[in-house]
Length: 547
Ligand SMILES: [Zn+2]
Image (cartoon, rainbow, N blue to C red):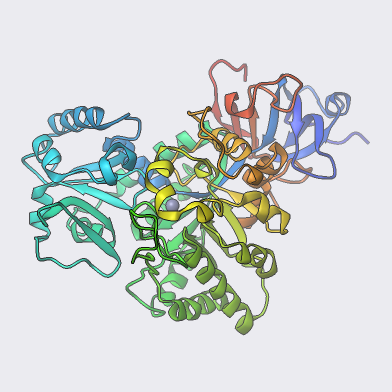
């Protein structure tokens, strides 16, 4: 009896991320699932008169990429607002802001962001610069990593921030040499102004998400974990999932409000239960445990070094007090949530691991797949704990290099020993930890191929001559592709149906224009995605590809 023929047959180098059969010459798809992986002849044998045959030889099919930590609503909104992400420095920022203000006379606020810390001395632009560009209304522009905002005098006035206003416990109001608020708000201090901003309309939020989804699909991404989902963004996701416009598979990490305690768990349970749409789950909770090194808010075991190279006063923040963190994580774990931690400093990483350990002691082992994102400075003693505790290392590989921001704002305050403890990807792998990759877009590029290039070289993508950061922590191409597909699928609890090209799994695939494993091939950073499929349906196709 001949089996029912395939709907789609692709001939191409197929890199499966399935150890049982790493390579094939083609893949056949039926009803949105992978029917077979095999030689060109085997795939040919599964075709019939109705089969669509696509010849992509010379290219490479991989499982669709999954981004384990990304902010599509924020990134999409930035694209709709004053978008500074692609600007190269203060002059360009000024031009873009001036143009935006002129083009949007009716908007009551100037909102947007994407400026880079390393374009301003000390990472802190001044309010007077923004006053000149946007004199008539409040302006609030987040920096590229979202941990600070540049505001003008009008915004400071509206928020009542003056010379004598104390810093909030979870943030800092930057002061200038005269002691006046400089116009830069770090971490929790952003909220003093942010809470005055009118809410985003449901329609605008949905548009933002669709813009973001298009961009991610164009880079071969078929699923992601949204690292901050609040009520308005969950509503937008649900609306898009409800009518079929959400083509990606999404796990929402619900935002843990650090000024509330365990009483919010009931709300989170309700929010999780409210999601019944296909392709969307709200099964993760995001706890932000510290800030970032650049503004000394990353939680460190030892103090930051001061200007003289000796230990200073600052050790960064623990947004959730460790004992409280242990209790909250134990409770979330008992309620069946996955916890998605943000931890940058070595103390924050340890506190996150301690909290999972506390939960394990009370609740025993389970399959919630808690994960720690960012992992910039990791104390060597903590590396083996990831596999012992079953915690996934959710790495943002694009940062693992001595880029300008690292050189100017991190190296001196960390000192050489801790600079060497940064982004220990190979050490994680060597210690048996599971790796997942994510971009943190729009903090950094969402392009997995560029991120992988940095993980392989430890050199900034656009500065090839810079010395590598801890070159012993480089990963090979196989390990990187696995982290960005099966590894992130594991975090998303989607590895049973996606993450590798395996018969029976869903046909979520990406096609690269070249095969970076081929002899004499260009490195992967020079490759491009030309086709992205979810359930065997194209969600992105380069117009130049015959599809
Ligand atoms: Zn993030």
